[in-house]
Length: 260
Ligand code: NAD
Image (tube, rainbow, N blue to C red; front, side, top):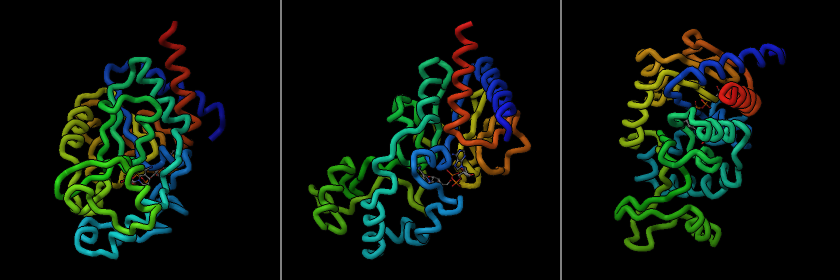
């Protein structure tokens, strides 16, 4: 894409944001690739390195070897040490400018909150890797606390209180989505007037219903993604570019327009 086109597209999105009353941003794994976290489906992505069948909820509950593998992957920390990228900060700026209703994210990396979007305005459809929960007594531990035990060669840590099974608060394959986040995300998608998809292939359901709810309720749709998605033909503005490049351009233009 030539630079001039990107400038023009960024201005179009900025106009849509300034004129909208409720802007919802919906992010997927592609939003965090510039933070050094691979996505699932791009070449070299997570599913090129791990077998998704090893990470089902059923396997976690029933197979001690599966639990070992899961903790090994968690300890290796694909996402640990990752920092928010310019797209995360641009979205936090949008919030500061009063132009963000909420973020709905499929990501589990907690980077929107670390960039400055308040926790209660981020709806995590697939949980997050920051907290570990005991499946028996419900006690929550920060991952850092459990990591100390993993680093001290404990292969499958258990609950300090009741010795129940510990599990990261990440939604596994075959597990239900967190009901509260899903309900709120659905409501916010239905009542927004601008829905911006960033870095998602829009093929993972029920998360991918959110833009469908928004469009069918009359919202305008913007898609910022490197590759095509099944909803491209419904987008008012479609941008095939890196989120970390285009989001700061958009927010800079929003700022200019609001200060006029
Ligand atoms: P996906 O892997 O299916 O799609 C990612 C999309 O982002 C691709 O279409 C790709 O072209 C695009 N992309 C990659 N880098 C980009 C960039 N810099 N700018 C713009 N677009 C870019 O991811 P998905 O749609 O989120 O769905 C898959 C699942 O991945 C979700 O369930 C999510 O929970 C999980 N996941 C999360 C993380 C994370 O938390 N960071 C990482 C990997 C996977």
